[in-house]
Image (cartoon, rainbow, N blue to C red):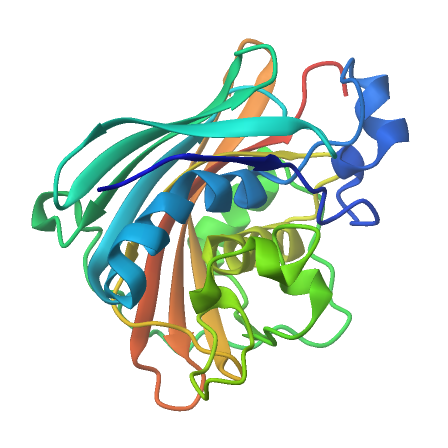
Length: 274
């Protein structure tokens, strides 16, 4: 049985270059405080899949996650499973007031929603310390025409900065470093975070808001693995005063270039009033 749970939200990025996660910047835009990253909220919504299906989810699972409202640090929340079967469920993240902050549809081996196996392009690696030109229509057109720079990210499950709760023992055991000999699996917060990092480094944004992802797993990323990440710009547009961009992100094993995850991601790269 796929079950929901209750916990306390944790802001994993209060010192991020994306200052929407800091109290000062977020309050300038009318929020109560720094926003818990969308990738962290995504991990909360997806966690019932890890508890129910274990490592099978990271071999053949997929998810569609939408962030609807902000979630704040130390805020109590509840993840409710609203519909489920043996291979699919829908979840909602609700705050203490009952507001739905995010929703997800999560599946196991659903070929109809598969984003397709990513193809390794061998995009040039981003130089250390590189910062792309500020996000704009012109920047996205350039990246679409000329291509984006790739990056590599190392997953260290023992590093507290990779945890999506305040302590590691609040995550499923599959994501923890234990004395049982098995290597910890990378979770949605890290995996989708790779999409955030490459996006913001190819087109500098501050502040910006992660809004929506569709992603498909093909093989797990384990503790100690390094992933090669490639990106392409799909579209950009304005809606209700916000400026949005859509990108496709592909994760590969850095050594073998075997596919790990496909991601389609949407973000607000320029907030209304900025």
